[in-house]
Amino acid sequence: MTEVFWQTIARYNAATWLVQLAIVLVGLALTVLLYRRPSPRVKGAMKLYLVFLNGWIAVAYYLVACRERAYSGVMAFFWGVMALVWLYDLAVGYTTFERTRRHDRLVWLFFAVPFCYPLLSSLRGLEFPAMTSPVMPCSVAVFTLGLLLAFSKRVNLFVVLFLCHWALIGFSKVYFFGIPEDLLLACALLPALYRFFSEYVDTHFHGQTKPDIRIMKGLLAVMCTALGIFFAVTIWRQVSGLLG
Image 1 (cartoon, rainbow, N blue to C red):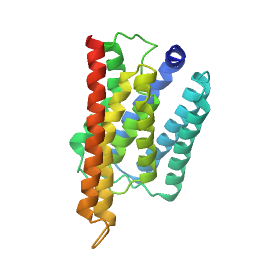
Image 2: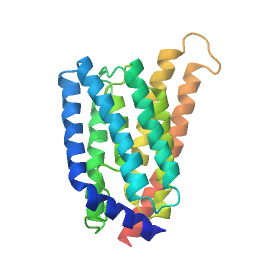
Image 3: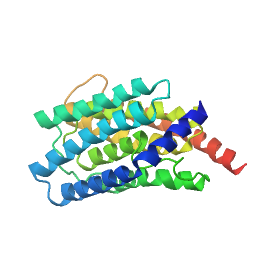
Image 4: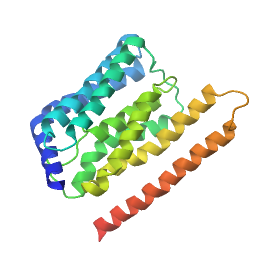
């Protein structure tokens, strides 16, 4: 199973590296425009880009390159739904892409993580094309979370929940397929999860609630802390295994 996993990644990278480069460059250009000239046209272009990006993962990655994997159809459906969600968002205009500046320092870390995937693969001794790349499911998930954190005045929590669910699924690959790179997504999940839902509680709950708002935020902090400890232990084991 592990051999098939890495073979499909190698096939995907070998066949699409030039397209992946173009996808990354377009994403960088649109992100810069979203920061500097956040016009309705630019915001619409970014949503179309996200429709394409999620559709690319569904079709080019899972249905074509990873067709040998037993679960490729289910994963393609997952990312296809994400593409449709962004298409719906484009039509109704729910996600406003308005910058709040609350999470700027954290956001830059999120934007850097997709480029850390191939770097970490190289440090592990892997060589192209059998290595992770910036246009793979987990790196796309991190980029999307970073984008939503940067422009978090009003975001589609359905997208956030889907990506958080994906992060927990991706965490299993650390063990089953020997891919510690996916710990990057798992670690990015925690601050994003806390920030999104903490802001949601502050915005949507007023006055008396049961449980109390402070208790709700406390429970959220405890949950994220517990997940953080679990991920930290896993990272320690992975690092110890590599050094050993």
